[in-house]
Amino acid sequence: MSTVLLRRVPVTSPVHNLWAGTKMIAAFLISLLLMVLPSWPILGIMIVFLIAIGLVARLPLGVVPRLPFLFWLLIGLGALINVPVGGAAVLRYAQVVVFGLILVAASMLIAWTTPMSEIAPALATLGRPLRALRVPVDELAVVVALTLRGLPLLLEEIRILRAARRLRPKPDLLHRTTDPVIDILTAAMAVSTRRAGELGEAITARGGTGQLTARPATPGRNDALALAVVVAVCAAALTLEILL
Image (cartoon, rainbow, N blue to C red; front, side, top):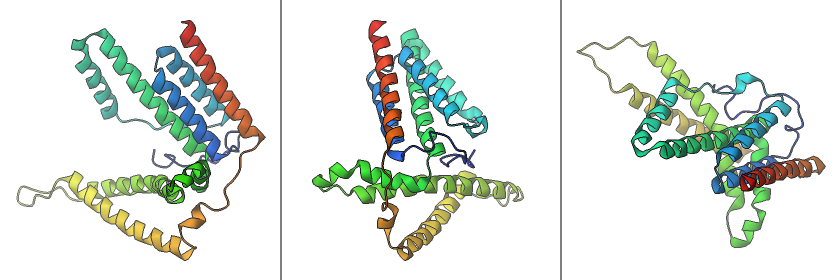
């Protein structure tokens, strides 16, 4: 799963060619609509719409992460907790879960169709009006871009550390070790600190963080068309909710 999580899928499609800021605006519009009206008709329309985007983007089924059994067990446990309250509480809980999964899916669609190098310039361009309020837009854009770039590496390091720990001999009663979770987290923090130092030195050698937000791409005609489609779908979902 970590091989494709938050990483661009190397295929060519109209979605891949869109400006990164266009995809962010589309995800924001979808999330805004779901926050205002998280009803089942709107949730269903958004699920179908995201699946259609995935088909247009030519994403293989293998990019979809396989969630562990523990995740679904916790979801089921949350539903059981709401059962004594009533059926309405269970339905509301299910809506919240589906709402969260849709937001995660929209975020992953952006990651799967967008190079990480385009995230920081797009964020800097979208946040340009905030510079009048003395908001450090470029610095925030760099932080977000580096976080998205470093998360897959961190997950890969944790996977390697877990595999290495399984190869260690099991401790006996006289030579007990610490909690394996604590060991892995401590090692991951040490590796992350070392990688952060190396990344900082590399960025400094290449001219500083300003280079990460330089030469931003600009939206084109296809971006306007894509946003029009997103707005039309959101408007249709809202109209359907009002009519029903």
